[in-house]
Length: 218
Image (cartoon, rainbow, N blue to C red; front, side, top):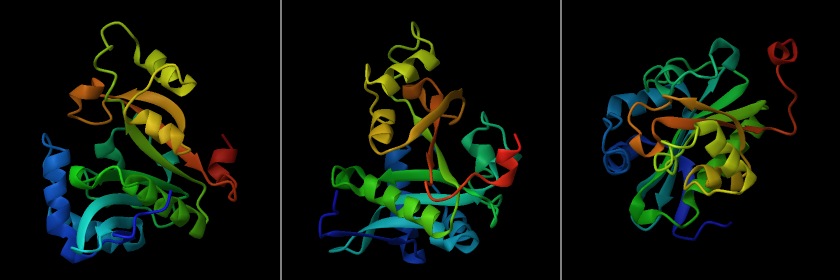
């Protein structure tokens, strides 16, 4: 899907910080928005991994995809977002880590339905290929799950979505975009009542890069 001509994907710049914080306030009303200091730290640690979707006529950042490199063998599959991102600071970024971790992706509601999230994900996958990384890992919210959580275990819900027997507003979109489910986990995000605090660990494997040695030894 090609981007409309009014948009482009580029790396984050300091002039984007205020717009990003405002989008955070809208998209994550229960969480504290990223501060300029945090965003500058992300940019200093791994500048090529911090992407924005720019609305060209206004020059405003209207969507983001933040990433860092990790050695996932240092973590547990059930670790929450706070642990994987060092509480949102990205100070655990490992320059030689073979996995790109998709820490956050969001688009301003006023600019959704233009393919921006897909284009941002394409940019991160290109980064995986350019840096010869093994894979990209992320966490998918399950905002359709809370409505059925009282009667349906999370793993069955995720299996239903993967099989196409049920649609989840977020996970179904990730699956359509080429992601694979690793497993559901509880407590990935601290404040996600729509998902009953469940999420699915998802990954995209670079077809041109073999697994790192420590993975092959397991």
